[in-house]
Length: 299
Image (cartoon, rainbow, N blue to C red):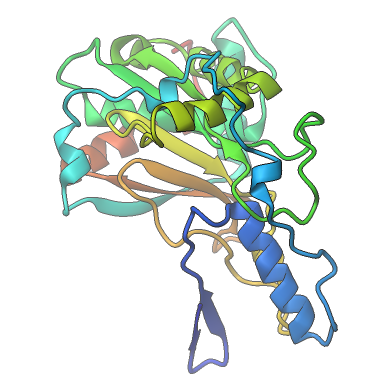
């Protein structure tokens, strides 16, 4: 942890997380505990719980019973993945922008009820893939959605558990079909991927980790997105009130996060940090503007 004080009297709290120890919910529990202690509490309101071997262990014997696209590697990663010249930017989705995305869904002729998070990441997946322009249009592209498994009855994960408790099922398409299909196509793929997340799927992931010797998640043409808007980072209060911003500092080449944010006009919306190679930035902006403007005809 690091605290940086500013001349104006404010401060920034920075935290570096080792993801083998905790996930977003875990670090949020830690921050809430610190804020409670800072304001005079004798103990955190939620006691921390570990014992992860009791909740998310592999079965004996382990057996892979589901398909896990999120771990399928390609032979050669795209060049931009290894670039040290990636442009770091942030995309803000205002309520008007989000409504425009929903309007695109209704005009596609196959409107699907979906969450704000689903329509935003569907938009970003399409725009990002278009901007990166795979040399092979039939390249397989993925969107992995980090999904919390707390609350699943068969897992019995206690409230105070702060270890990793998520999976990231992947939506899969070819670049050509993703980029030429309406937004509803991407939304449907995302919803189908999330629907796979049964207790059996979660147990299969744990078994997969053992059988495959802890494989790394797929990196080539895999866009990984996490929704942290419900964690409440911006609401942590150490005695000075709520934060101006609470969330991840920046994205990586293939990992982004959806975070609550208020822009300079006072609009509450969602901000998503993203990394792109320089040549893809303008194309990404162009594709994004097409998606967030009021559509005049079917896409």
